Structure formats: structure tokens, C-alpha cells
Length: 433
Image (cartoon, rainbow, N blue to C red; front, side, top):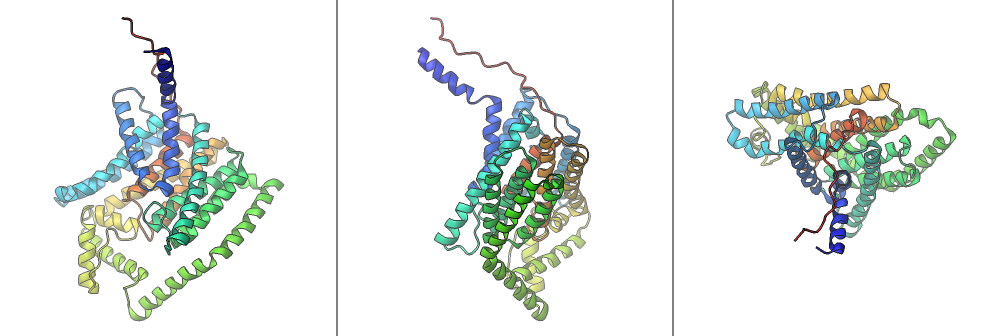
């Protein structure tokens, strides 16, 4: 090879060192959910497979941090509970396609180990800046879908308004936490990005995410309450409040419209027993789900039974031909799929994650560690709030994003940075003839 070719190849190779690959991977993980939709699932699962191979071939060390181990046990217990439910129901063949997505959860400890070679400060900045870009991208998609395509409820690239609002809510809270943590200096841009994301969430019409955004925002403010005492911070809060009121005024017609829908649905259900509304469908599915849980309370019906149970329940109890894939309540869905064992295992994931975060927030003053713990608090609140009236896990985007936040948040909060063990790549030299 000629020297110019060798230098060109060497330059390319330097751009794909393990550390740089982690950077590119992290950017995609936090930017793509609202803007590129299911791309995040391909990115995370592809990275998880690669990480598993790296650990299996001993090119990367398996990082055994106590918080990660505790969370891994909870995650694997949930996957095991669903597998046990299928075995108990003798429905492995029927449930096979529904069990395959659990691979996303199984990648957790391997992705954690490979992500652990990243410098924490660098990773934290990537999380913040990528989330900031995602919020601006979400606003752009909102403008296109609402004003150009005429969509009444925007759904970004997620294909679902609630999923879109969920991942944007996470981005908004990351921008808010980043602005208060002091890790990133560009506070004004982060505030603008958070406000852009808030507008996108309003136009999604996802009422559960409006509540999640409020609760998560209060949690972030409480975590950083000591930094809100200075005059500079108070001035920012006043500006943020003023702009928030302007956004509320802008989104008032949407809020009023969604509130009116809820009121009319409630009146139809309470006064006339009409289940043929959005609220009515949910109440019907909750009743069907509770009945199904009572039939098999310990191990449940298996992950592939939801569709048939819901369809049959609507026909038998309400005389309607309706079909859904879940019960619009995450823990009720877990009770039906995996029984008490499955629901307890699912709850343990969020309990362990919250406990890990609380421990760090109680004892650590390091801004990066506290930011990682805040990430965990944000994802737990957002998922649990949305999961009470929608899907908690079982969606490719939501599952991947949950793992991304738990992996990176746990590492930033309480993980050890592992060295890159392999030697530096040797410079390319021409072959000796």
C-alpha cells in the first residue's frame, strides 16, 4: 500500500476505537427515540449483542458493581417469571414470539460492562446534549405533523402518541437536570430544549405524560434544591416560569380539548354504562384483566394470552368486537401474563433502581453521580406514571429506552470505570515483498 492510503486507513481506524464507538453509540441511544423511533431498538439490541460477544470473548471485563448486580437479579427474575408462566401453561410454542423481545432485558449486564469503559463526565455530557438535540427534533416533528400533515395528536417517529410523549418527557427532564447539575454550561440552550420538548408533549395529547412531566419536574427540583437558592438560579426559575405560562396559554386549547374528552367519557361511563370510549375501553380492559388474574393468580396465563383474553372478554362481558395487545395498565398486564410472581418481579426492577438512586443521592455530592441517580429517578417516575393507564414494558422502544436509562444511570451513579485492556492498534505498515 502507498503511504497516503496507509495514513487514510489509520485515520479511519482511530475514529473507531472502543471509546469513540461508545460515544457514537451513546449519541444514537439518547437522540433517536423521539426522532428516529424504533431505530433505538436496533441500536441498543445490536450494541447489546456486540457487548455480549465482547465479554464472552474476554475482550472486555465483566463489571460486577453491586448496584448493577442487584438490578440484574431483578431484571432476570422478571424474565424468568414470564418463562415460568409459559411453562406452567404449557404454552412455550404459543408464547415463543412474545418471549424473544425479553432479550433486550437480558443484555443489561453486558451492555453495562462495555459502557463502563466510558469516562463518566464525557458520557454525562453526551446524555445531556443528545437529549437536548432530541427535544428540538421532537418539536420539529410536532410542527410538521400537526400543522402540515394535520395530525390531531402528534406521534413523532414512535408511531404512537403515548410512546412519543414518554421518550420526549425523559429528554425534557434530562435537559432540566443537566441545566441544574452544572455539568453542561449552556443552560439557556438546555432550557429552550426543555421547553421545546414540553410543547411536543402537549401536542401529543398524552394526558398521563402531562402528569409524569409534572411529578418528574418536581422531583428534579427537589434533588437540586440546594442550587436553587442563589439569585442567578432564582432568576432562571422566574424566566422558566414565565415561559411555562406562555406555553400553557399556547397549549390551552389542546389541554381543554383533552379535558373535555375525559369529562364526556366519564359521563358516558358513569351515567349510561357506555364503554365505547377511550376511558370506557380502559375500564373494560381493567375488569377483563382482573377476572383473568383471578382465574390464574400465581403464574398467570403467559405472555401470549393477552390478545385472546381481551377479545373474548369484550365479546362475553360487553358484547363488543374489540382487540388490544395489553390491558392499559402495566402491572395488571404483568399480573395476567406472569401472575403474582411476574408482577412482583416487575415491581422489583423499579424498587431496586429507585433504592440505588436514593442511596447515591443521600451520600454523594459528586455532580456526575447525582446526575446518574437523577436519571434513574426520572425514568422510574415517568414509566410508573404512564404505566398506570398505558403500557409499562413490552414495547420495543420503551423496553430499549428503559434499559438505556438504567444502564447509563446506574453506571454514572455508582459504577466503576473499567480500563480498556487491549493494546493500542499498531500502525499499518507495508507488507515486505
